[in-house]
Length: 93
Image (cartoon, rainbow, N blue to C red; front, side, top):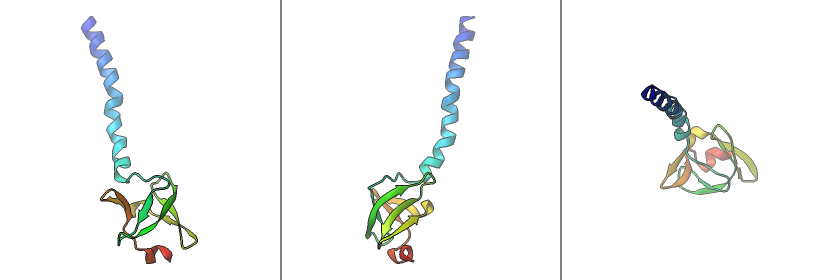
């Protein structure tokens, strides 16, 4: 009886740990961006500090006196620096 209860407790406590990895790949796909972090363009030029981080991973910056939203699928970490695949000219359009 004790071994059955022990096995039941272990099974129940392990269930949340099994469900956790399913939610991690989505978070791992987007780089960790935070407000104030410097964003760089495809040529490694500094664009602007990040003013807004949306829940979908996209970030907002003020570039040439305009608010620009940079899509999450263009962001990556390059040498520990948040970089977009787009150039400043492409973002300024």
